[in-house]
Image 1 (cartoon, rainbow, N blue to C red):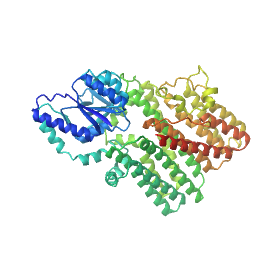
Image 2 (image 1 turned 180 degrees about the horizontal axis):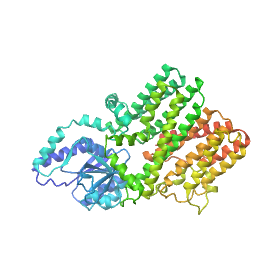
Image 3 (image 1 turned 45 degrees about the horizontal axis):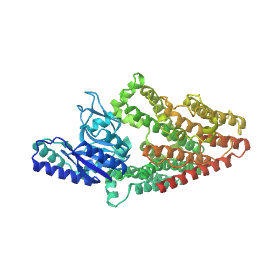
Image 4 (image 1 turned 60 degrees about the horizontal axis):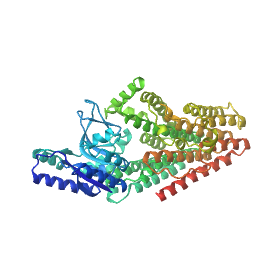
Length: 614
C-alpha cells in the first residue's frame, strides 16, 4: 500500500474550476496507482507526520505536484518500482539539472544535465527517515539528493507528463495526453528499452502480442517463467535424442522457451506485478535452463558416439558461471561508482568509459550492436545453440558456445578491469563479504589470518594452480590419480582463505568471488579427471554448485531475503578439503556424487523453506 500527498506545484494562473478538476483527476490517478490515502500537503509538519506514519506501517509515500498533467500509468509505475527503491519521474532534457546514470538519478553540474524532474516522487520506506528530516525544504527531490538518497529515474518515454501553470498550458497538456494510446504505449514500454540484437529483432518484434494474450488469460509472470522452464527442459530432452528431427524440434523449443523468458519480464512490467520470488526465480531459471540444455547436447552427442562432448559441456558451464559472477559484481561496482558525487580518475579506463558511454548513446548504430553482440549475451547464446543444433550436432554447438564464451570473457574482463581501475571504488566491502565469498567454517575460524592483504592475488593463485592441473591432466603431463599433485594444488586453493578477513575494497576486488568460483570449479574438474569420475556426475556437481552460487547473487540483485544459515558442509573451503581427502582415500566418485547430492539438496531445501516463510 502507498500513502499519497499533493504538493503545491505552481499552477497559480489556473482558474479555480480548472484547478479543482485537475486535483480531482490527480486524486483519481493516485488511487488507481495504489494509494490507500491521498492528502493535501498544507505544511511541512503534515509531511513529517505522514512520513513517520508510513515508516511505521512500512508503506511508500507518493508525492505529486498538484499541477501535473500525466498519464495515470506513470504514477502507477512510480508506486510499483520492483526493487522497492525511491523513484522520481523525469523527462529527457539536455538543459536539465539532473543526470541519469545507469537508471540512478543524481545531481548535475550546470550544462551537464540529461533529465529534468517532473514533480512526482515516490519515497521508499527505507528513505522515509531522510524525508522526515528534509520536509521543511520546498525542493524535496534536491533535498533528498543532498542527503544522500539516490532514487531510480523513471523516464516518461512514450507517455506524456507536464507541469502546467496556465490555462493554455493545461489545455495543451491534456491534448498531448489524449493523443497517446496509453494501453498500446504501456505494452510497448514493457519491452526493455535497450536489449540485445537477437532479442530486439527476433523476439521483441512480436513478443508484446504474447504478453497481451498472457495478461488476458490471467497468467502471472511466474507462471510464464515455469512454462519457459518446461519448454527449455523439453528442448534438452530432444537434444539428448540426437536424431535430426529431435534436434530441429529442440532448436524450435529452445527459441520458444526464450521468447517466454522475455515475456515473463514484459508481463511483469505491463501489469506492474512484481515479486521478490518472481525476480529470483527468473534469474535462477535462466541459468538452470541453459545448463540443462548443455547436458542434453552432451548426452545426445555421446549417444551417437561423438567424443569430448561432456568435457565441452563442463568447459561451458565453468566458463559461463565464472563469467556471470564477474557480470554481477561489475554491475554492482558500476552502480557504486555512478552514485558517487566525484567523477572517476583519468587514464585509459576513463577513456574507455567515455567511449563506451558514447557508443551506448548511438542506439541502432553498427558500433552499438557490435558492442552488445561481442559480449555474447543469453539471446545470442541460445540462438547459436538452436541454429547449430538443428544444422549440425551437440558437440559442435557446445564447442561454439565454449569458444565464443571464452572470447567474450577475455574481452569483458580486460576492459572492465581497466575501467574499474579508473573508477577507484570498492563494492565487495559494502556487503557481507564472507557470505559472498562463500567461506565455510574452515576459513572463518581457522585459516583466515589477520594482517594479510591482497585477497584477489591469493584467489587468483588458487584458480591458476587448479587450471594448470586441469591442463596437465588433459595433455598427459601428469598421470592419474596424481594424489600428491592434487593434494598440493588443493593446499594452494585453500590458501585463498588466508586473507579472508582483509577489507575487500580494492579497485579489482570485485573479481574475488569469480576467482574463488574458478578455483573451486577447476579443482572439482581436476579431481574428477584424476579420479576417473564419470563426466555426467562431474557435470552434475558443477550444476549444483552453480545453482548455489547463483542463489547468493540473485538474492542480492533482487533484494530477496538472505535466508538462514548455510549449513555445516557449506563453504568452498570444506568442499575443496573433502575432495582432496577423497583423492587420497581413492573414493573420488563417491565424494563428488555425495557433494552433488548435499549441495543440490541443501540449495533446494533452503530455497523452498525461505520462500515459504517469506
